[in-house]
Length: 123
Image 1: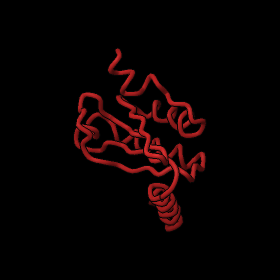
Image 2: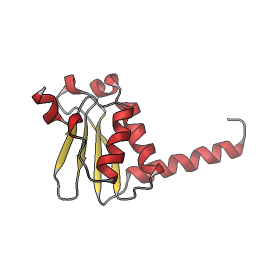
Image 3: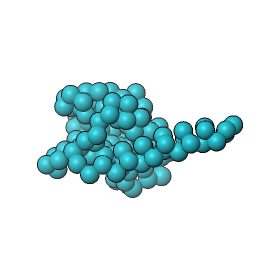
Image 4: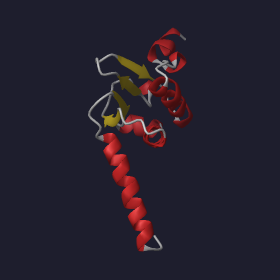
């Protein structure tokens, strides 16, 4: 930090990200952030979701984290849950895949099937 103004800007950016995580309606994006997920790269995945959703001003999307999902070999794991409770589980995620999921699934409603657990089970 070089100035008080930089600190204020960082505070506002952080507040906006926290508000994004606390949205209560619409879609939920749940990122597995247990030790195995973090070791596999879940933190950049979660950051990409938060940044892309904020950039696109998707006010109907809540980003949260969870602990162990139980499929360590498939980490990082992300679940997208719609308002009715239907869930799509994405596996072996990275930041680029997260950006694509935002663009295609969250914005346009098209599941990125090649990143899903079902595609992984069939390979």
